[in-house]
Image (cartoon, rainbow, N blue to C red):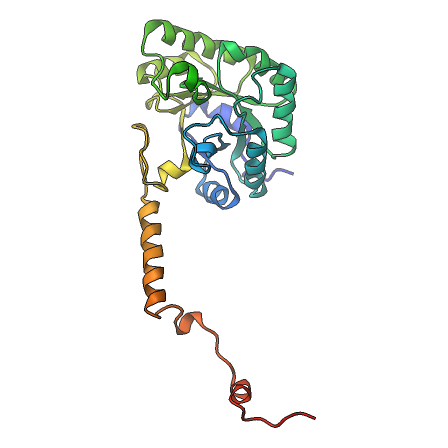
Length: 285
């Protein structure tokens, strides 16, 4: 049974009129607890885990089993946030039936409440089929990382008239099909604002300006969990990487100098046992 604080798909859709929808990625139990306690509306178990956790250059090697595994950890935390799981590359591209099957696995095995799927007109068929299976779908237009081999890398999309028109048309059709919201990634702010005005469902931006109904970022980027290059659209709200490096350095220093463990981190014997260890005892018969 859902408790009163639990956010739902209708809750996200209703926030279209309010704006300020907040979303972040999570791939594990403790991070999900943090995001839920902080009040995040939507948690995405993103295929970005391929880059963030697995150290790959892109998301293409992520499997459906990877997403199910991490989704199960996120759902185990029972967050108040809506849980959305990414459909990874290859899990919906070849066959609509296969796409539906994998979407169902994310719900049944991963504990997700909705799925996210990249692409517009080239994916309308599988999106429609998944929606017919009573699985909510979050759309994703603009820069679609699973298409980087076709687009030539992680590049801003919709800067030319033809492409901008295509993104607008795809967004309108995705709404007509029944997606509950659309992620707009790495497109000009003016284009994202125009799409947001045209739709009755929410837009969630990432590198798409402030005109969207909400925003999403990768959690590890937000808190500065890495010292690697970050995209222009990321704002670091903390520098956790440096703090953790300093913590480990201090641990190494204290261990070498015998300052750790100290009295507060150690256990001590009572008097009788102390005498026993020092030989001051009578042997039991």
